[in-house]
Length: 425
Figure 1 (cartoon, rainbow, N blue to C red):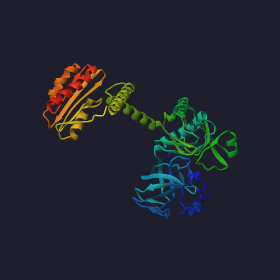
Figure 2: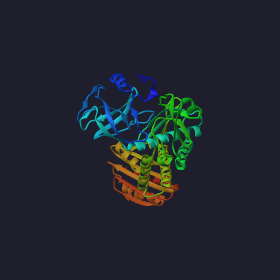
Figure 3: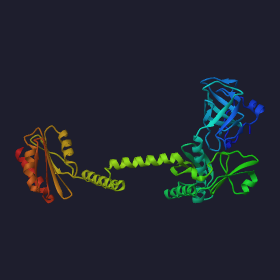
Figure 4: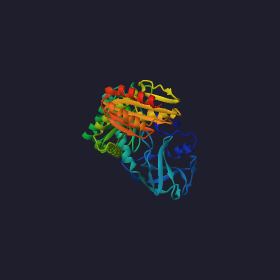
């Protein structure tokens, strides 16, 4: 036990320090924090940052304090250690070292051995215990929904989140996660007072209590009943399940072969999570110009699919091979894509060039022309060809476009463009 060899004991692993002397002189100090968040306690011992005994911690020094009786819960069973105040001094954390409950302290005033000081546990404890109780309900939900093979493989309980690791051979489906979340919230809504019993280990096992990972059990154990959950646990918990508020599963993932992990929030953290989701939804609505998000996203997906088809069609268009007439490159053809971009691309490839392209989409025709360093004006070319496809248009000497409505006349338009270009070159 002195070596804290079992990793679930909650004891911090620290091989060097004056722990043996403290145990021989004082024994393990008493935890009174189940029922008291405030107390007046005597400083039995002080340790510096190297865990060596000192008579005093001066202003600004960080060390460790051992109180005769302490309301500060030491990290154990997955529950994080308490913070708070000892007089005006800040308690930064609390852990067990070889059975000793020691708090990390930042001295704001001089602290000396023998001082009797007021203790006040941070209100974070209220949120921590809500998350701890929610962990027990989650364990019960997993066993009820997934099966009795579920066994806890680790946990972490903090003021703003919980993490629960458990044995399970495969990922949990969304439907199963929804059922698990509902199970926990139903238990919270029904409400039940916490029941705590102290009994011998055999009686506890016979009563159906489940042993939790991260606890070291003696002959007498603490049995906690929370609604449908009955487990051995030395942590702090709510007095009634109603205190937990709401419960949200944030994430489910794999840890290792045969071990899954669920991360969740409850109480104030759940409220913050819901508010963040609501804010994100409002931002989505604004980005979609107030439209119903699902309908708008469906429309966007359809548009993306349509554009992807256009790109596919463009990539499958007839190869636009240039010909040369009197040292001028000539490109004429049908192109089902961005005509302007394609004309710019072709013009950039040649020193002297004329381009005429036509495309069809949704029963309509688009034509475009471009010229560079030659005696053909794109605007005049488009103006001459547009009536063939039932449209009109024009533009600059180097680039012009037009629209039409007779897609069957595209071959005629391309032939006429070929004739005009040949005659002018």
